[in-house]
Length: 635
Image (cartoon, rainbow, N blue to C red; front, side):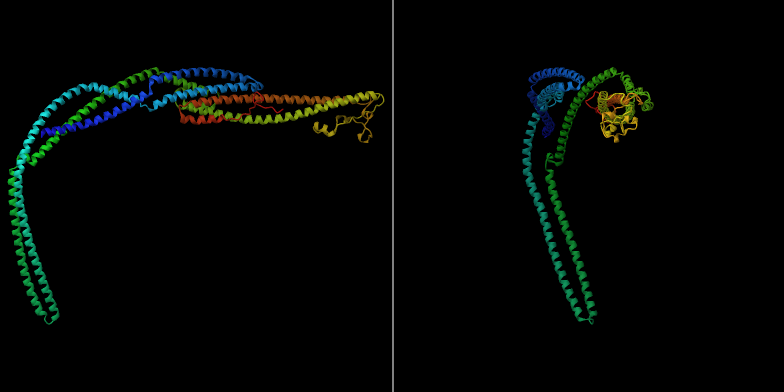
């Protein structure tokens, strides 16, 4: 029996080993899947293909770089051309850009193809690092556990031989016990029959007692029913006889009640004695059966004792528990040793990483100095642009200078600088709008002045031609000494047209020297009426001095108009210079905005500054392709 308990304990020890074998099978399946996946990848053929793709990509990059340089040079040359040349050369530049875009597209396609060629097999392959690490751990564990397993195998072989001998001895004892058990069972059957007979006698005795008790109770119930009926009949008779016989009825009922009490007391004593006799009889029968069963149990062997069997089973269970606890202890020890080795390897790796980080820290020991210099450069970049920048001075005074290296210095400087730039931009925008409105007004005035000048030139030419014709006709038709009366000259053009051009003058300047000549009373407008002779007139030489004075006035007016035109051109040139300055400021703002957007050290504090600077890039400027400065002149 001890050998059987040992075999059960060995089987309980083998159960966790089988579980460990199942885990090893699952791990082996993972390794097989990983090996199959990497076999399908076939690095021996994939790497040469990627080498060819890499060489093609390097060639594409070289071509892209050269074409980009060519495009940059062409773009610079194109920007230097005038508008007419730009219209002629823009098609070639667009073709160059299209070729560069096609080259980039082909390069992108080749890169995508190479990427998917590499990604499609690698996406299905597992990560080899944990598998390799597990294989290394298993190899190290195997090297350390092979001697233990060898010694354990030898010990198990010795145990197997010992257990085989114990098993044979146990089988022999089992056969002996079986034969002894058969003999005991034969004797036990007879004893059991005797015990059963005694217990059957006890049961029959109890059954007879119960039946007799039942009969007595039934007779008692019948007698009580009969007595109850008699009492009921006597009660009814007494009710019928009336009140006269009440005394006699009371005496009769009293006697009957006394008799009933005597009979009931005797019946109770008799039933009590009968119950005591029956209980005594049952107790004797029970003692007899117990004495018979005790004699049978005394004859049973000690090995069949239930207490002995219970202790034996408890002993075997304790042995199994002891073996399982020993196996768990060994497995825990192995697991702890494995974890200890893995922790030692991790500690070594961490030490190496710590040494590498320490070397990096030593290399980066000048970080604070570089950071301080960077802060100084940033403060110079954003704080020293204008010496009278109040916001920058406030920010510097609050932060204690940029040399402290605080995280809020640059953000506050940026905010102050952006505030100032926004104010300047607002002022420049308002001034730009004012200058633009002034420019439009000056352009309108210039256009009207040019129109007036053209009309004046036409009128002047017409007047000079008419005067020349009149002079020729007068010199041919009249003698200078024939007339001494100063004549008048009336233009053949309508007065309204000339008056409109002369800004509201009612008549010709020659009308101021008319002496006693009314054109309305002259019947004919001949050349004799238009000429003046003699030397008595104030002019001394006829109408020519008046025409000369008129021409001088026109020349003076033309000079004034030319001066105004020159002033307008000067204002236009100043506006162009201001617009160029605005464009330059806008470009500076854009560059600073790009610098701010690239500065991501403090996103929460610098986000507002970046947003404020980006709002300044949307400044509308009046650009055009007609002039180099971005303005269009309405001529």
